[in-house]
Image 1 (tube, each protein chain N blue to C red):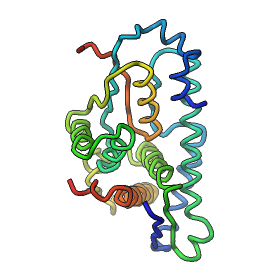
Image 2 (tube, rainbow over the protein chains, first blue to last red):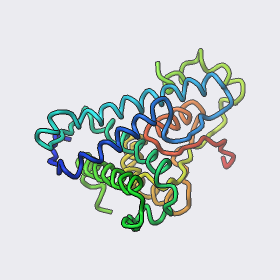
Image 3 (cartoon, rainbow over the protein chains, first blue to last red):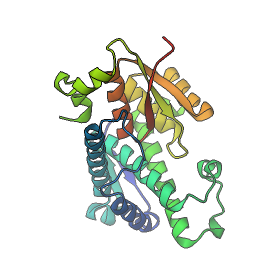
Length: 153
Length: 101
């Protein structure tokens, strides 16, 4: 994958960053996905979870770094081989959390298809949904650049 | 040392080895979730297991339509390392004893 610069609509994306940063804060010290390590070894469980949380926090920091002062000047984010995998994982973690924290009332099928009654949603939920969709779009873009054949099927 | 590496370190394997016979086979099962994108799941399968496109896509469709897919079978340590890696990618993966073989 070569370096890709993506020009985003600053006015549309900036409000979503507050939602994303709040979600990132809420995820501090805990995993987005409630997964259990295999077996019953307590020490392994602690080590397993600690390492996953550390990786998740590092990934999210890398994602948030895309939206620094340069982004607010130009609206451009730069994706390259050093940040693409962490950004992909961070998007996944944040989407899992947004779904759990804000979008639980929406049926899975409707959430997947995007068929949701936006006008009926409370403001907070609407923003969470917009951030959820934005992160999915960023993931699709990255997946496409990592492997153009992946979206053919 | 990360957890995945620790699982292959003989010194840290004592407890696990006592609980499982070396010849036991285990399977890595990925479960469906309503959040992760299909294209993302395919990409993860390709990167983690080195699957080619049709195989990765078949497993993704199994997860999507049947709720689960066995993506790998083999020895405990390696299976555990794969589960850990899938958790890093935020896929719901579990380790199961393979009683089919």
